[in-house]
Image 1 (spheres, rainbow, N blue to C red):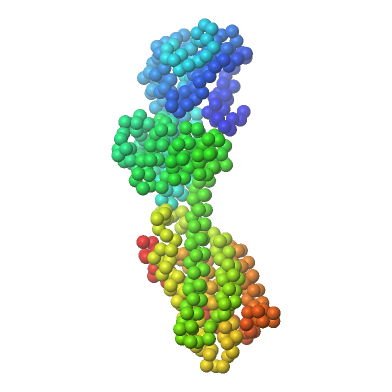
Image 2 (cartoon, one colour):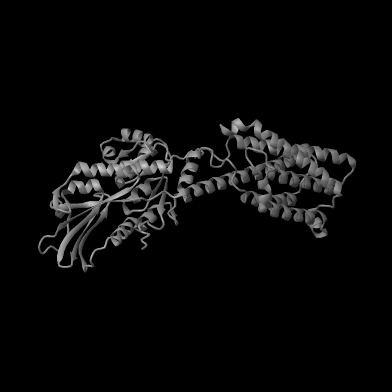
Length: 489
């Protein structure tokens, strides 16, 4: 028997199927659907020749509605201490509990209202259900905690049940819980303190969820909220990131959310955080990769103009570097896998710009280093009688090689770049092959020489430019540990 959208009803149907009772014809006459405001549902049924009202819901709510309990010997006054003791016992085992009750329907009754449940309701019993956490959810919560993301559980379950499940999941402060009734009497200041102090919120209403989101945001927290019911929509809308369930979630909830989980699995959220950090890191790496070469080109041109020298790079060569080289190599960084510590570092401050102090330093440092290297090489070549076309071709190859090595530097922000991950990134090797082919074309193909003003280079100049690029690679690798504290700050 399957009931993916309503697992609680599915579990109760399985329980009913295990009880051998004679079949009865049934007809639904009226219904009060479940709502988290009153935490029960009720139906008016015709069972055979009898009209009855059936109620299921949170045990503590039904205990307040019932005056009697059903037993083998007939009706008895409700033994509230007994039931509360059982609830505590089962809750410590992490069981979710649903109480069931009934009452005879009034003669000729065709409609069902909340007022009909205020007297004469008879408790039938309590069913305990285990909804064990998925192993991947436990791992995902541990990953989130390592990543500086505090996970909180907001549930309608009994406090003891919520704490037991929280401990199974590894949620931080799972040894303490606060209930919706306690939250309702708090002002905004008290709620803000409680929202940060507790990780388990039990017997809550949708209004509690909304207020908790606001309370955390008042403390400058970035809040993500998950939900599936219609009443969860306001909290999802208020949250910085609203996440709706794709399977159990209602259309209203999905419309209010910023993203939808197609598998209703918390582990997918942790995976999304990991992927989001990887994309952001690679975007920042790409920016830090492209800008130093542009700075080096600008420095070469400006200083040559001020000194009255021949332009080291013509406009078409600059266009070639920007369109063919930078654009090509940046694709390699886009395919870079996440770094090892990607889920072991705190969330970044959203107010910090991509071009922070360290980024500006890196652009200035690497750009100046490339420009100085090119100037030194040009100064070495000019007295030896080489043609302007030859010098420009050597400088072009130097800049391209330096850019290729710097792309390798950018792979890893805080560590040595020549790791096993380099072999796994097929994108880098594809763009490197494309770049090599393009450079061979622009240097040796006659029609490209005519278009770009280049000339063929002896093999030793490929070696010279490779050595220069590798030397700059090593300098940047040495710079990483020296600036680590600055980067972390």
